[in-house]
Amino acid sequence: MKKVLLKIDGMTCSACSSGLEKYLNKQDGIKQATVNLIMNNANIEYDDKKLTLEQVEKFVEKAGFTSLGIDNFEKEEKKKSNEKYKLIAITIISILVLYISMSHMVGMPVIPFLNMMTHPVNYAISLFILTTIVLILGKDIIKNGYKNLIHKTPNMDTLVMIGVLASYVYSIYGTIRILQGHTMYVEKLYYESAAIVIFFIKIGKFVESKNKDKTKEALQELMTITPNNATIIREEKEVDVTLDEIQKGDIVICKPGEKIAVDGEIIDGVTHINEAFITGESKPAKKEIGSKVIAGSINYEGTIKYKAEKIGKEST
Image 1 (cartoon, rainbow, N blue to C red):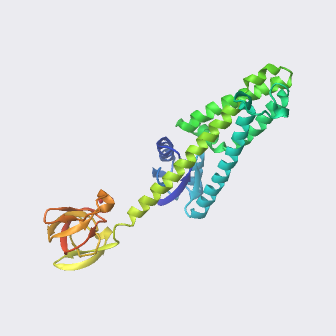
Image 2: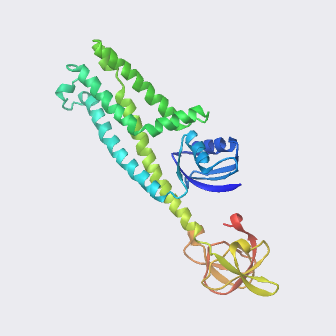
Image 3: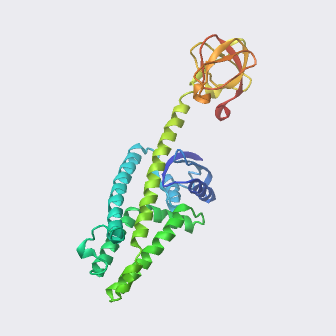
């Protein structure tokens, strides 16, 4: 068996992460897969005799998402940069689509050769070209929606895909009728609907991505709060050990200025401990025999001894 942590791109909601997790766990050769939406990654344990890493990444692709691989920092940054430029292009084109299709409704000057009444063919063709460009730039939404529908895990992208394609395809039909001389269809084009929906979804995903990045940074900071090692008492001797070596019931010694290694209960000593990262309270809390201590908090004053109650992932 082999474990790998893959960076995943394309997850936008809990339905995405749960759908990907279910899909991966159904695949032959994968023992267990756990998907984290906030961190945008998938922890996968697979049988390396049956599958290669490339095949595992193919499963991710088939589920409608993109694997950025293991060493992914540069690839992820490049992806974010590309998305920013795509969003700028979509914004400009969508505004142009709105102007062409709705300027006459709000009393704004109409571009003469794109006037829907006097030049219906130019009007329809220009909207078709511009909207097609928007859909190409936002094809990841349509692609994700389609793949999730195929895998029977529909999400928001699926609904967007159906709505956008319905208005786009009907508008193409209307454009064909206009080219055939039926100019009354000029008022039955809905290109702007498809373009604007893609625009707003892209804006929403961009804002969501920024918020997720902030959350990820906060989580990563929390992960660095706990110390790498601690001093415990074993066989009446003080021994330096790593966090992984601490067992429930061990007596841990914490001196002034050190961080609490694991959650526990004080059995000896009195001190004040800073728990601001958990409680938000800047004033250090007094701790004495019987008080609970939280992993990552800072011991301000006296030396204390506490019994380890939660270790590893159980610890705060």
